[in-house]
Structures are given as structure tokens and as C-alpha cells.
Image (cartoon, rainbow, N blue to C red; front, side):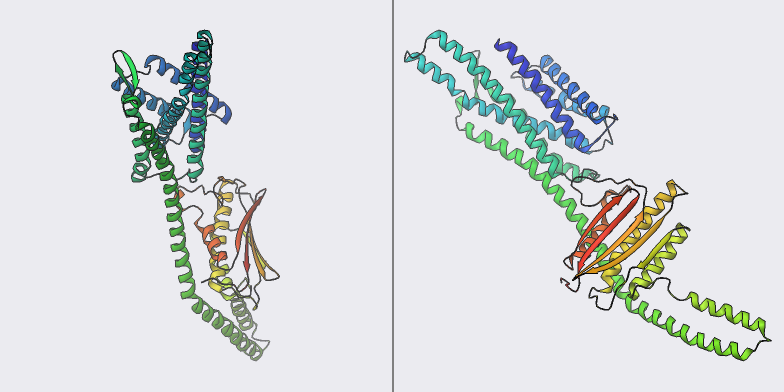
Length: 482
């Protein structure tokens, strides 16, 4: 009965490992099958069957060559399953396979050592037999029951530890669409490789044969009962720590790139702001003076000079065209809106840009170049979304609407735009994920808007309603943080 139960436990454990493998791979890679659940079941069953087959062909023994061969075969099996059932295979697959194997082996040994500590129960039953408290038949029953319970305890702890370790790695590695470079891959692989090699070493030396009797290394060196679990625990922690550190590095680099771009935008806005204000004032002054001059000339020309009047009227109309199409009360924003408008109509001739409700009063104490940074980034994102929509559906209506309003001490800016209705949102990502090839730079514009808003104790939010994307920015008026 014990043998049958042990086989059943091995089957359940192999399937449990397969389930955790598909959970781990599926968290990073996109499945080939249309149904994610069916794809996961296939991976679970395939790995479970492969694991049982490998254990049958290469049973656990004390041969170091066979141990290494078994580890290599399992690694190849995991890679093949990734190739068969998942797409988008990159260098990250090597990290997933090595990390899964290392974590699996480490948690296996930790669970095994916990079971060995619990194995003192056998000595208790023998002591009770020696004292005459139990009979030999009772001892045999207790031994069988204890063995079954310890086996269930061992496999149960193993699966639980493996699950929580893999989940922690999954949660720490937030940017799963990040294309890992070669040197970064080496950085990620090292702790997993070290942990896996430690476990291979333990499988080779942990049990020795003396006089045809297997003996644990603990029997010769009892101090290893403390040292080995400590080494394994530190190895597991190093894997988790490296993943977290790598993710922090990604976030730090993205934050650094975002701030560099933001600083350049602010610097450019500061450099051109005075010049834009001077040009804008000059145009208004020239337009005002020339309109008066033209009015006088037209009166002097007389009715008989109809051709001259027509020419002067056209010239007057041309001066009218010098007037900015958008008037928000902020010179920088007016200039930016007009510049972006002409840029947009070159790409999308029939696009509608409405900024009638985007108004800024003199009571607003937010710096002009900060407003310009936010409006500029928001318009760039909106124009790109409209361009993609138009490329997919030439008959689609494209528009951008800008609004601002004030509530108490808070100022709100909203930018609505049409888009194709598809939003890719990762659990760990604050903003939608770009579909551009360069994933390293995704979300830089939105991050710049967020950083600028935070200078004024503000925040950024977004929402989707059908094929309308809305970006909302909230700021406290006049609370600038140095």
C-alpha cells in the first residue's frame, strides 16, 4: 500500500510541477493556443509525463554523471515545451528555464531537510517499543503511517514553497515585455546557475554508500544540518533579490531617460518662450497697425479703383490669417497648439482639433513651460493614436479635444482623442503599454506629464470609452515643488 501511495504522490507532484511551470512560463510568454487554459493544461500534462518518464529512465541514485545528465535532460525538456507552446521566444526563455529548475531544486532540498527533521518520530516509536509501551505489530503500523504522513508532508511543503517562490519572482519582474540584452541576461542567470549547481553537488554527495548501506552526509558532519539549509536559503534569496534588483534597474533607467527628455523639453521651452512671446506680440502689433494703414489706403483709393480695393482686401485677409487659430490666454500654449495643429493636418488632413474650452486665466500660477510640456506630450500621444486609427480605417473620424477647468484650488486639464480602441495594459504598469518596437521608451510622454503634474501636488489618470481615450491631469494651482 505504501508503494502505491508513493507512486500516486509522485504523479500528483509531477503534475503540480507541470502546473507551476505553465504558470511561470505563461506569466512571461504568450501562448500559441487560442485558449489560454487549454494551452496551460497541455503544458501541465506534457511536463508531468516527461518528468515521470525521466525519473523512470534515470532514477535517482548516487552517480554524479547520471545526476548531471538528468538535470540537462530536464532543462532541454523545459526549453522544448516553451518552443512548442509559447511564442515570442527570446533570451528570457533561458532565464525562465534555469530559474525554474534552480528554484525547484532548492525548494525540493529544503522540504527534504524539513522531512528529515521530522524523521525523529521513528526513533520515538523504537524507544516506545523498547520500553514496552507498544508491541511489534503496533510499531510496524506506526512506521507505515509515519512514512506516509512524512511523504505527504514532504511533497506538500515542496509544492507550496515552489509556488510562493515562483509567484514572488513573477511579481518582482514587472516589465515582462522588456527585451533583455545579453549582458543583462548573464546578470539574471548567474544566481540561478549557482543555485542549480549547488543542488547538483548536494545530490552527488549528500548520500554515500558504506558497507552497502546508504548513509546521509549529516551522520558524518552534523553541523551540515544548519549549514546546508542556510546555503540553500541564501541561494534562493539571491535569485529573488537579483530579479528585484534587475527590475529596479529597468525602472531607474526608464525614469532617468524620462527625466532627461523632460529636462530637454523644459530647457527648450524656456529658451523659446520669450522669443515666442516677442514674436506673438510683434505680429499682433503689426497686424493692428497694418489694418489701420490699409483702411486709410482703401478710403483714399475711391470707388473707381475697384481693382486696388480688391487687392487690398485680399492683403487684409492675409493679415487676418496671421492671427493664431487657438487662443487660450497662454502665449506658450497658443503657439504650441498652432504648431501642433499644422503638424497634425499635414499627416491627417481631416483631423478636428477643438481647444475652445482650453482656457487659462491670469490667476493661474503654473509655469508656462510646465503647461507646455504637458500639452505637448499629450498632443503627441493623441496625434499618434489618430494616425494609427486613420491608417487602419481611412474613413474613421479623428479628433482631439482639449479642456481645462478649475475647482477650488485645483486645475484640471483633459485631452480626449479618437483611437483604434485597443489598449494593452499590464498589471504592474501604470499606463497603457506601447505597441512600438522600442519597448524601452514606452510611456515616456505620459511619465513626463506625471512628473510635471507632481511638481504641483498633482496626478495623472486615464480612461477609455469605446474608441475615445481620455487623459486627465490634476494640479494644485501655484504649489510648485523645487
